[in-house]
Amino acid sequence: MRLMGAIVPFVALFLSAQATAQSMTFSVSPASVQAYAKVSLNTTFQLDLKENEMGLVSSAEVDPGLGVSAAAGLELLPEVDGELELAIYSGTVDYRSVAGVPVLYLPNEEIRLLAAFSNVYYKFRPATNARFKLGGGLGFGEYRLTDSNGMKHRGTGLVYQVKGVAEYDFGAKTTFHAEAGYLGTTDIDVDLISSSQVRDSSLSGITFGIGAKVKF
Image (cartoon, rainbow, N blue to C red; front, side, top):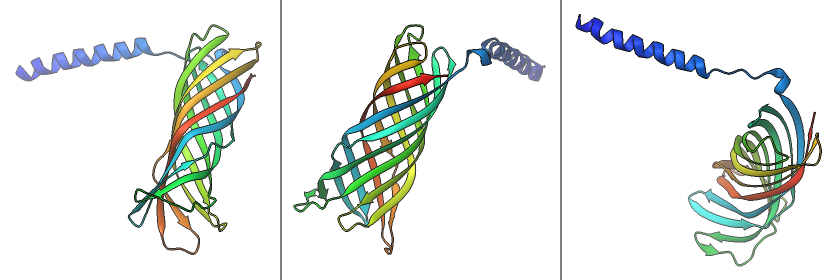
């Protein structure tokens, strides 16, 4: 009897949870889904590079450089967008320190990050022609540093971003947007050809972009 007394409340709780889940179920109508494509001209601000090579830690600051991103997405719900984005950021190193000591001679080092993201955004005031979106994404990226000797240090790893986007509709199909966000990478193992040394590198910084979106 005690066993039955313990099972009955559990079954009742399970059935209640199942009924609640069913009441929360919703379906996205294909007629309400709208596709879009967008392109942005990007730059970075306060982009930092941290490296660890054989236990020697160095850090660098990267000059803002121009980049570009392109994305294709779907308006899944009035408040939710999902998209795939391909972005590239580049710049040159303008300051470097090794073990906390500034480097007096700074070689001409160029940095590039090519990243592919899967993003999700939540839209505030979606029914108006001006709205704000907040979201972010996770993806995969290739990091490349070209030193003053022309040698290329390359590596791949996970990348992530958090973005705020302001949109304004110029018509039923065309939208202008401005965006700002935080971009980061996990530790990327960077290999140099003909060298047995492995360098752990990570990038982090603030990004800006302006562009346009076209709905289909």
